[in-house]
Image (cartoon, rainbow, N blue to C red; front, side, top):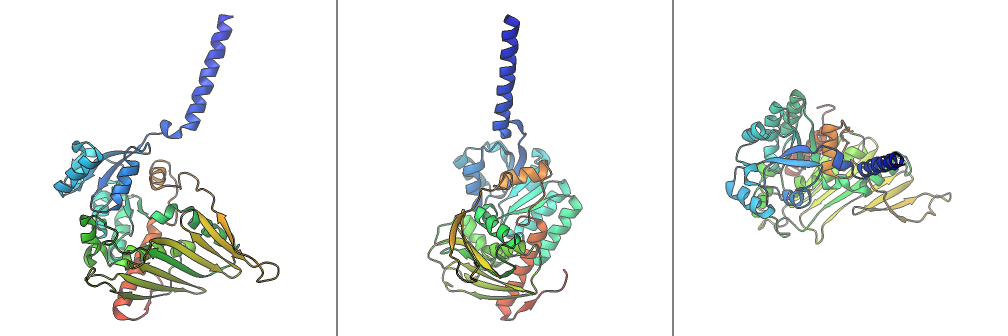
Length: 376
């Protein structure tokens, strides 16, 4: 009898252990070793506040040449001063990260990728990929030579509303895409109170590539390239303005980009002048449309049997499936589990994004439409 009781207890314990492991997958997986490169990009604060103790990653080093800024953030977030390095090469050699998260100026992205590629360390940076097509192509070359992943993180990559719009378009539920309008902007980086170290390079045309054109135009270029399955536009036309030259004397604060394809058009609106922040898009097909409503909802209207008698419906988009629901799970899955980089974050898509932004900058400066070459 005692032996039977022992066996029952054994199997109950085993079952409970298996259930616990199933319910807590992160507990049974090793975290990804990551280094942080740069602390001058304001998005680093959101990352540190939400993800410092994430089971998906282990922060093994932080490279920031500004020792005052590094010490200030160490005190603010309570991480070990032993994690701090003033030089990227030293951090890679001593901390041995498997990947780095980049929070430098956009201009520094090329240098960071070229160094990491020599060490075989993967990279995820904040949008956009680069300040010029020349730098984007150099990043692509370095990534191939070093056999590393280079991923670009956009806030909108994790919006379930965008994925719902993509699915409807690719299921032909609204017919072939004819026009896409993307809105991304806010009242301006100074107006919303970004940190001084962020504002200083965000408003520098060399370090950021432009103003609102690069800061917010990249979202629309990324979404449209994704919706078009990587197809490059035939032409790029942009209008840029300095509505607030007293605040932003060196860069544009208002931009509109028009992209043309053989049978579709995109209008990308980027602004540092809007009274409220917004990130949404409208996708018009031959037989219907879908409009995203912030992160979670969509508005859909499709032609009914009467042709024009349908009504607009507000629908809650379905949740995204892990690991494609947040940047850290996604990064870990790509590097450690062989997950395929998706179109929004992939290097291939983002080289095209920078090609569009580079052409838009030239168009805005010259007042002329830029026709892209057939191939890069």
